[in-house]
Length: 227
Image (cartoon, rainbow, N blue to C red):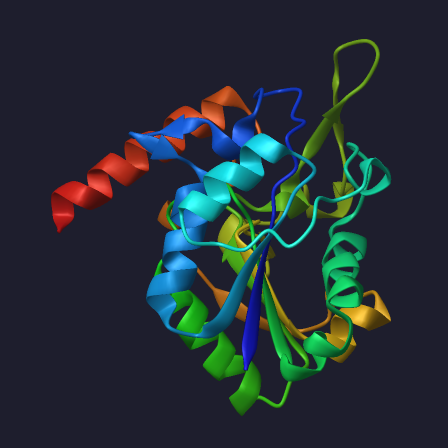
């Protein structure tokens, strides 16, 4: 059986209470819980949070919150893997039932049930221990600049100054929406070498700022119009 874990701490400096903020009429975490439910893949959907408020909202939406996360695992610098492993370890022997575990980010309202279904199928068929959703960079990162202290542009990769964009290799980045891995792979501490599952750029918005939030709401409303 499969387990879904949604990490949703209450603290967020750039967008206060981001994980439960109203997104197009509903707490944004509701979309993560809903897509997990609609995928039909999971025996359990667990929210890992340090907040009673997030816990109550999540339980009302049909998720489980078997415990509150410690403050040590809830600050701005805590990586994802220790949070997932905290849930696995807290489940004890119950965790043995779940071979494949999916971390679903709480701010991924454009995620679809088929993304979870197809990515798990890809991971199993490829005999990989993890699967990471990625999308192509909008522009070639090989031709990136930095700005120095004098305000001048500095090439990051000067060897590509004269290279046409179409001649450069395609590069990809994590969408920040979800990640699959076997229980053993999570516990090893690094899932980043898994098989890639590609998502269209139009649905790959990592919400970190208010500008990202506004763009995601616009994309979500446009997706409803197409149905």
